[in-house]
Image (cartoon, one colour):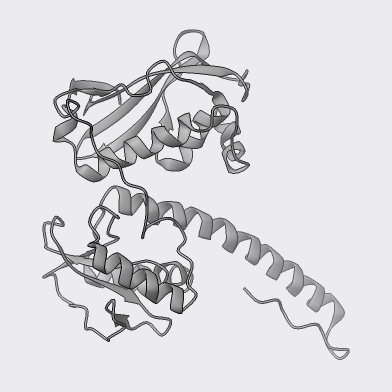
Length: 286
């Protein structure tokens, strides 16, 4: 966002000062909103959210603020059930739609397709390479990792399990765990003594993951450097009180959900003694 032009000598000094202050506040709000929308779009990719074409045009592709983020992502048209990726496209600076070869295409305006942000697991290698080169040519930096995002798969023998145990017993800091709040996780409810003993992540279709920690985080006495031991990542159906009910085999989860769970845990366990400045924004929530 560009700055306001400097006031002229003929401009009202008081009005100019108020306009400058208001513009500064608007810039601050725009940065905050943009950061929130980046997380929202990344979550939409990971949870495989789909939009009707008219909603995509009205609320994303032509939105005064969001269009600047939309133009830096690869988008896909999907079958009406949202499962099958039909084609990929991008949104240009003038609001047109092009394929990986930068050729203009028409986006269906009816309900014959759905629109979504393809995950790296769904992108064909040829499409990923072509759009990656196209974005490089236009000097477009993606707002989050999409093309080339690290992906993960279950190991042999894990598909029938109801929990991921690769990191069980690993030591991490409370600060590192709080970074999960930027990745779609939320803290569990405070239990006896005001302690939080788990983090939870909705996986869609009524499923949820739960990561147990010990000794837990005491509400109001959080110490970011405190060491926590992580348990297995349990998966199951969401119960009445937002807790796990019936367990679910890992192999029954969508491949994207599995990949993102593993990615989250690799992130946490790779940062045993560090956490980012962004993580500190969640301190007040504990």
